[in-house]
Image (cartoon, rainbow, N blue to C red):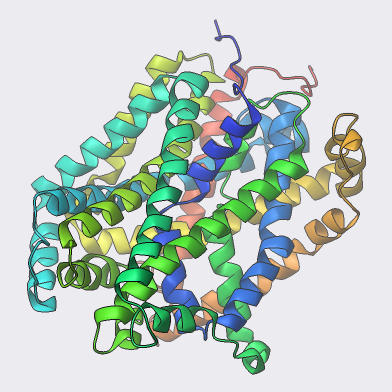
Length: 496
């Protein structure tokens, strides 16, 4: 027997939980690198355009499918798009299962470095070489990585086990405002402690430098669209799973905009900590900002904080933010698996236990072999763009204008304001955007492995992504066939 449907306790609780889903490690470490690497102001403009052209329309698409069908992804695609397309919803789930197993390892790294920080590891200056050695030693120790991954998965699964209101909403309502307060406090501290053009102000200049003449650089636009998509989680299906439980009078447009804008605000605030900190003490900040995500975070930022007064406090707060942002994103990731199982008649307790154990097991190779983690990070990151395409196709199959006029601008939303025709136009254009964005990444990846770009056994090759897409699709198709009869009905289900 299926359990009674649980709803969010309040709109603000839903939005804060959705912000917890959207604001993740990418906001804290990837966005600052991208904005400095792509000339500051021009990237900011392109990034904001991407928010309204790509991310918000796609977030609205996810939310409205979930709200109307009241079912997790597989049942939602079945009822919204047609029974023979249900497997596309399960394919989206398979991509999310894979990225959860990969992402939990990253959050485990953050947990480890938070423990390092509060234990005083960065109380005195350390060299980049020492930080690199410590990072390499940790990643080479599978016992430690597995332990912290188990803790991370246990925390995320435990909160989801408590339910929508008692678990996810209650925790995110405290954690998300807390993370913003910490970041703002750190920003103010840096401005006061390291003022002037040679200090934190230099970092602000790098973030907002008005190099508007570079707006014609297509690579800036492609990078900005990618950052917006990955940062907001648009097309991932995470806002989808939270929107299954919204109240009937929820304004889909309002909430999608709040989540998208809130996520971007979180990225901006994080950047005003990361970039000014690097510029305040580093001899060559631009070279540091050009390092990869792990290098910036676990090597250079630990070195930077250790050189500042109050290094233990600063590093502890930073890695607490990074862990908090990561684990609240995991709530939604775990909920995807749990909700799809409860739609098949499982109890929440049984489903949460199965997802925790299953995701931990799937993540073991990524814990043990960094090369496997890199492979999964690349394949699932590209897979998420593919999943976004599936949500847009789902809307187009049902009828974009119909969805806008009858579902988004329903009797409740129309009392506040109506979403304009721009939404359905952008949804129809989404396949074109996808071709440009996906094509850009494909061309880049071909350049990484000249002559062997097709090889599926290379960590970040073009071939490995296409191989994994085939795996996701096959798994989605087979699992849908096996469990189709068990999926429960929703308000849009057509009984045969």
